[in-house]
Structure formats: structure tokens, C-alpha cells
Amino acid sequence: MRTFLKEKTLIFNEFREEVFSHYPQAVIEEAVARLLVEIKGIKKIPSDLITTTLLGVLSKTETFNVMSTLMELQKKVKHDAELLASMKDPAYNVHRTIAMSICGLYGSGAISLFGFIDCKFRFFFPTKRPKSFISKGICAIVASTASVIISDSVKMDYSKRNLQMLEARGVLLDDMVEILDQLQRPYNPDMPRSLCEEHILAVLRKQQTFHALQLAIKIDTAVEAKEFNPQYNHIVGMDEGLFGVDESIATAVPLMYGTIALTNFGYLDKAKIGIIERLDSDHTDGKCNTFIDDMVCGIVAAACGRLAHNHTPTYSKPLK
Image (cartoon, rainbow, N blue to C red; front, side, top):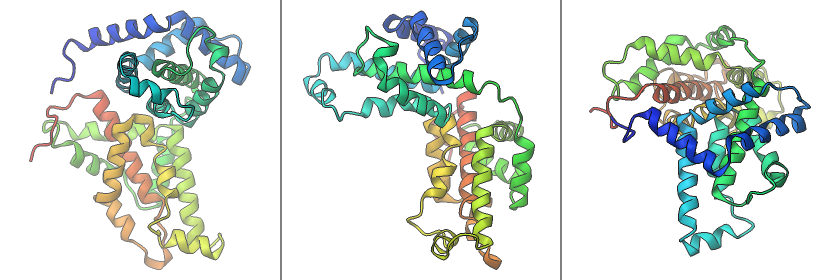
């Protein structure tokens, strides 16, 4: 399946040049530095670290897709009176919604930073228009770059701890590998199964995965022990249809790997393949799997997105 009309390296070089034609690289890097001072009081950040991190954010396929959309819409709005009129409405937020897809790759911290930059836009970019499509994308790029620098000190590999927690709830690494293989095999018939394991483990290394998984299991086990009030224990224990906090926590993981991962999460949450179905249907002896089944969905969906971003599939549509 061919995604780009030219070599990907050329496409991304042209993409960066277009971004920097609107907001010069030095201006974006200065905004990152100012944000780090404002938020964390970090004043001595090596300029080459900011440069490397910024270019890393711009090298992501999700960043390319989002910013390309925003830049194309910026061109269109000049000739579309209806769209321009909508954008002038103070309640217009669609450009923010699109831009924040970039921040999703870097967790809730990047999203918080996006809000800060967006509110104080003129402080960071005194000569630029805050309401444009491109300006929201630049906010997301600056926020994501700063978020990576802030979190760069977290080097710990959480995969062992995450696997131990999962195994304690009856979920093995191979259970998740099996689901990922089943999802990706129709697109990549010759894909080695070991590739699935590699991407599951990559997701499990993340601190954000650990935090979400730990909290999910804490809630499930607390419900089993009847630690919460009776009404809450009943709602969570019965996995009521209108209860969605379990999905809210679990989506923190696939959000790190773009919208394609989030789409896969929705599919797995409904299809309930393999271990996910077994967890969902197991209520023996007062067992509560309300949060853990969604976490497995989230981990596999994230690995699915990661695999898709790193390995171009053979087929754009699954083989029957």
C-alpha cells in the first residue's frame, strides 16, 4: 500500500519547510523555551535538545496528518466565506479539537500545556493571529515538544511491573499478542508474530500505561472487597451500560498512539476478542473485571496503532 506520492523523507522535508514558512523554527523553539520557564521554571535547556525534540514531534505521522489538515484548511478559509464566518464565532472550537490530536500522543500533560499556550497565545507569539487553524497546530507542537522535554527524565521501564499486575488479574502477555496478531494479520499476512509481542511490550514500558493500569486494578479489587459505598460498588460491579469511567481511564493508553489506536479501542470494546471476552463475562465469586477488560483493550489498541505507524501494511483493506 503506497501512502505517499513521493519518498516519505522528501514529503516530510517539504512538510517541515511549510510549517516553518508560517512559524520559523527559531520562533517555535523560543516559544518552547519560554513555556518551560513559565510552567516549570526550567531556564537552562540546551538549544540542541529543544531542536532535536521539536524535529522528533514533527517526524510523527500523526503530526503530519493533523498539521497538513490545518494548513490546507487555512488556505481554504481565505476563499470560503461560510467557514470564515463560523471561525469568527467566539465559540468556534473545531480547530482546537483537530490540533489536540497531536498532544494526545504525549499524554494529558501535553493537552494541559496546549490549553495554557492557547490562552496566552500573544505572550508566545505577539505578531501572530491566535484564531487561525495553523496557530492551533503550532500550539499543539510547542506543547508536545515541551511535554517530551519535561518527561524525558522518566527513563524507567515499567513493562515488568505492568506484566505482573496483568498476570495477577489473569491476563498473560501471549493473550494480548494473540489479539494483536488477529487484528493485524489480514493487513500484513507475512508479519512475524514476534512483531506483535515487540509492540505490546513497547506500550507496557510506558509510565502512563502503568498509572492507568494500576488505577484500573485498584478500582476493580476495591469493588470486590466492597470498599466503596454500596451504590458505587453495585454500578461498577454490574458494569452498568451507562458507566463510562472505565473507558475514560483506558483510553489514556491508545491516545498516546494517535486516532487509529483510539478507533481500534472502540472496535475491541465492542467485539471483545479472546481474553477480553473472558474477562468481561467472568463474575464468579464476586469478581469485578469492569476496568481491567477495558485496559486490555487499550493496551492492544495502542500496540495496534504503534505497529501501524511503524510498519506500512501490505494491504489497505483486510484480506477476507
